[in-house]
Image (cartoon, rainbow, N blue to C red; front, side, top):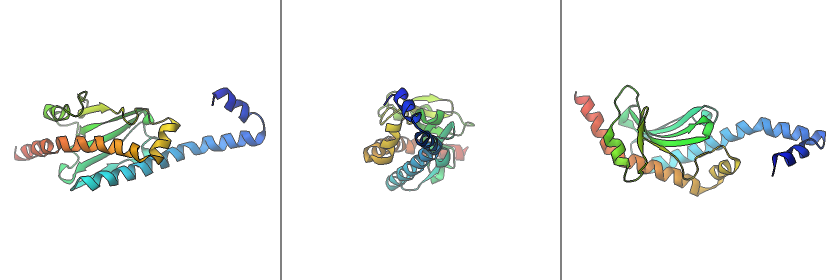
Length: 184
């Protein structure tokens, strides 16, 4: 469907014009609902596989906020580290990895532990290991991607599998780093 054919349809009559305005007005809340539902399902799937972990998310801001995130962490990590799914630029750039408190130095051990699974992992800003999400999609703002988020179990599985891989590859390293910090 081209933009010009949509414009022609909208301009055909007043009813089409009103319908277009109503749809445009509802779109942000529909995107927010898709995000909330998806993050709820993602959280449930992750916690099913990670004993002693918790979720910290901004589901109402996931696409509305410019730098929204979904974060899981072990109960013992107290915000120092988390496995993060980030929706940058309102979902135009999806990222994931290990993010943490900006007050601590980044750990080269964490990114090294991720390299066998994700060779392009790198440190970035407050991320010990940062990756751009390519599978299932990089840009989650497109209607076909939002529909997949809403309907496809394979979409959910692809995201969950990557986050679980990050969690399992780095958990023991982060536990050790936090234990060392406590004993200082």
